[in-house]
Length: 373
Image 1 (cartoon, rainbow, N blue to C red):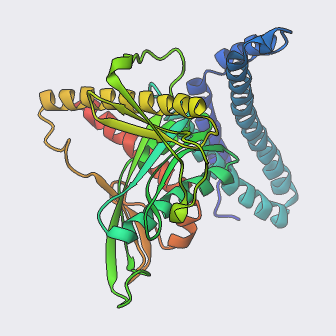
Image 2: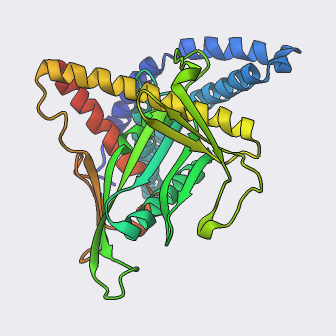
Image 3: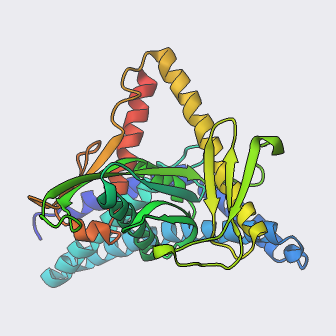
C-alpha cells in the first residue's frame, strides 16, 4: 500500500467533486426540489395527469441526482477517516480495503463527471431509438434485432423503462426496422453517441457453406419531445394509413386494423406504431415519434448548413462508427474513440457504459475543437 498517496488522491477527488457540484448547481437543484415537492403536496395535482407525471418524474430525477452526489461526497469523507486511522495504527489490512474503496470511488466519480458533460439543448430528454437493417440480407436483419436487444438489456441493467413503438419483422429472421423509447433522464444525451452505422463481421449462421458475412445496421437516436416544444405539422402534410399488426411469421397480433403508419409528405418521413391496442392510441404515439424525427431532421439540416459555410469537408465522412467482429478474432471497436472490448458477448448483453462514456468524452473534445476553429 506504500505506493498509493492517499492524501493526493483524496485531494484530487475533492477537487473533482467541487467542479461537478458547480456544474450541477446544487443550490438551484435544491430550490427546484423544494418547489416541486410543494406541487406534489397539492391535492389537485392529479387533476392534470400529464403535468403530474412530469412533476413527479422531474422530482424523482433531481432527488436521485442529489443523492448520488451527496452519497459519493460522504464516501470520500469516510475514506479519508479510514485512511487516517489505518495509517496511525499501521493497519495494512485496512489500508488494503481503503485502496479497494478508493478505486470504486474514482470509478463512480468518473461516471458522475460524464453527467456534467451532458449539457446540450436536448441532452436531458428521454431517447427515441430507431434501428434499420442495412446491407447484408438476412444477417443484417438478424444484426438489427441483436442491436435492439443490446440497448434494451442496457436499459434493464439501469432499471430504465422501455416502450416499443414498432417492430417490422423480416421474412426469414430478425428485423427490418424497430422504434422504441428509453424512458430515463439524460437517455438522449447518453445514447446519442450511438447514432450511425454499425458493422458486423461473423460466420453467417444462415449460410450453409459457413462463409464469413459482413452486414450493417443503422441506428438513429432522437430526443423525445415535450408539449412545450414548437413542432407544428399541418394536417394536410400527413398521410394516415391503418393496417393490421403482424408478428414473426405473419402471426396476427390484432384482429382489427389498429396499427397506424404516418407519412410526412413534404419530407417523406414515415413512422409506424403498433404497440397500443387502439388505433387512436397508436396514432398519438406515432405522432410523438414523427415530431421527434422532424425536429432531429431540422437540427441536422441547420448543422449541415453551418458546416457548409465553414467549409467542413469531413461533415459527410465517417457514418460507420463501430465494428463488431466475431471472426477471425473477437473484438468490438469504436472507430471514433478507439475504445474496444475483447468480449462481444458481454457488449451484446448490454455492457455499453464504457463505450458510451468514451463516446461522450470524444464528442465533447470534438465540440471544443470545432469551437476553436
